[in-house]
Length: 428
Image (cartoon, rainbow, N blue to C red; front, side, top):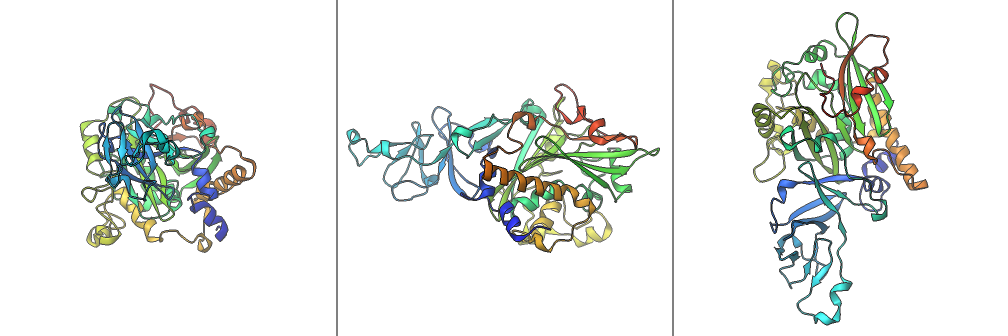
């Protein structure tokens, strides 16, 4: 378990907090590129790390991300007019360019130079892999651009979605590195969901509900190995990549696309769950893409016009007790994504980790917490850049392999855990 002050340190990410400084060391996914589809389109509200921001795309296609509120009287610039290379406040006509610099104040003489004194806080916003990424830390410490494989394959090989999760980012992320729950919570979906069914590995998951965990530190985070019994005395290893602070890549199944997540704090009680599927060597099939668009696998159906899941706490996640009793779904909640989110949200906005009783299968979670605590302390005390910032830390893969019992999983799967362009993931 964690002490209260440790739990607070890891879960609080607003301006001026140690956890906030940690997250501000990285490029973070902020919006889907489709949310700003064309030049001079309507601006979009963005809340990240407890900061209220506005994003827009100007007449030249440049992306801006800046404080949401006009420096004059505090009006939300979501109401602004996006026109002629800037966003104009409709209240008194103050206009800002994509860097947050005020470029027009109609009530003041141009020669006064008043505009030059007014600049909203702003952050860079770049497109990569259909995602708009931002860096919210000190400009002099800006890291290399993100190098995740899913964002670098051709568009036809990848699909990315996002959803609001009504819980702190950490309890959501910890679910992503907890492989033991798959044999229970998701057992009804392994052989029915089109993005999972048919893989030989599903049998290993369902037949062995007591995985043995071995966790090894990597350059960027952790290799989390879940070992189950396979055939002929061998072991089936599912190796999850966790890269700091909140990236996970789940081990593949058969020839299905590989998937993973980012959990990005909105504030201390809500987060964005980003979910990606991609295949490194082929285009997604029509069936696969349609399933993702329909909310299958790790994606969700939405409340129309929002990124809130259609199944949410206000409707008890559309729980189907009959389906639960019949074994169609283990928890009664439909869909892998919402099976996870419903239970994580049920813990409350920020779970009290002082009351936990952890067991051996929680070793990945325990080590991730310790790695986060160490990295945060080193950043605050010694200004040491945290793991996961460097591009090489991001050029990683998950893997699913069957190994003899005398083979350490990291050594035996070393090549499979690195990006190898033109080759598929190691999968079972």
